[in-house]
Length: 254
Image (cartoon, rainbow, N blue to C red; front, top):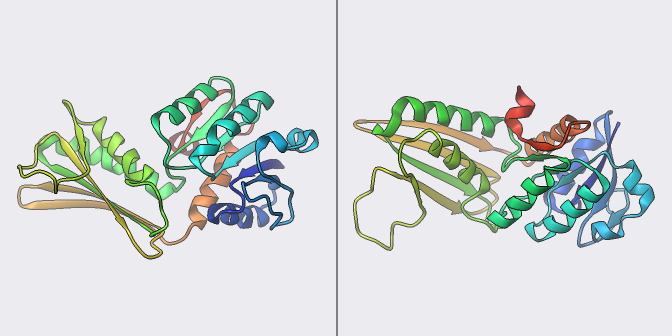
């Protein structure tokens, strides 16, 4: 049975992961990490990794992180020090934080994905295939929609999709986030990325391929946070026992 340390355990995604693990037979949450160190679900909670006692650390087989980017450095330091694999699900990371993940993956197995949904990762693969077929003849736009409490924009998933598409295109591709500040025609080497925030939208992503007299759309709609929790728990089970390195959803699906 996989012993899970859950970072961000008292947040919305922490609650969803806790509920998911509660109905599994091959995993259990042995402890949580949250700045609000309240014991809400029956397992001990600590305000930082530095306060986790040795008896909990010894039971930990994997860490799932659904917390805040500011907590990443200390969490990875703890994971590397104790040789514990980590599943990083926190979004809104900057380049230096992503570099910390890559550095940690040289010493421990790290599963990192901007989105833990199987469906979203299928959208990524379909978008790559469409880009390879359509080439530079179609204009590509990405629209993402999330709830009004989401802090980062565009979403990490939108950027993940854009990066995958960019890898299939020739030439120097740029991302266009804001067209209102300039008056000029759309250039062929850009991918437009647009963020919508409102209500309780869990997550919507649409890739638009606009060509001459035809439009192709690939989209994904998340109806609850449960699918992300399921993906994170499956990733935690997958990464246990793996050798050091970077892993993502495509590796798990092979």
